[in-house]
Length: 93
Image 1 (tube, rainbow, N blue to C red):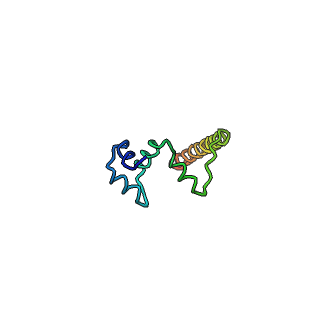
Image 2 (tube, rainbow, N blue to C red):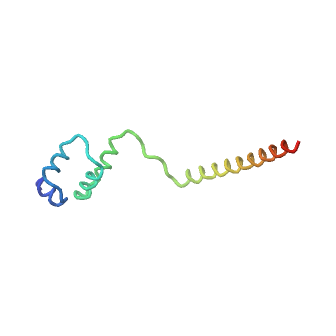
C-alpha cells in the first residue's frame, strides 16, 4: 500500500498526508482518521506508553462512594438547618 493510496482513500492530498506523518505531532482528528482507515487503535498504543494505571470504576466502589457522599450531604443539610435556626434566634433577641 502506498502513501498515495492511503491519501486517496482518506480523501487527503498525498503531500499533506506525507507532511503530517513526518511531523513530531499530529492532530487528534488526523490520528482518528488513520485509526479508522487501518482499523487499529493508535490511541491505545499511545496510552500504553504512559506509566499510569487505569482508574477502578467497579460498581461496588462507586456505590460506596455515592453512599458516603449522600451521608455527607444529609449531614451538611442538617448543619445548614441548625445554623439558619441559630441566625433566626439571634435576630429575635
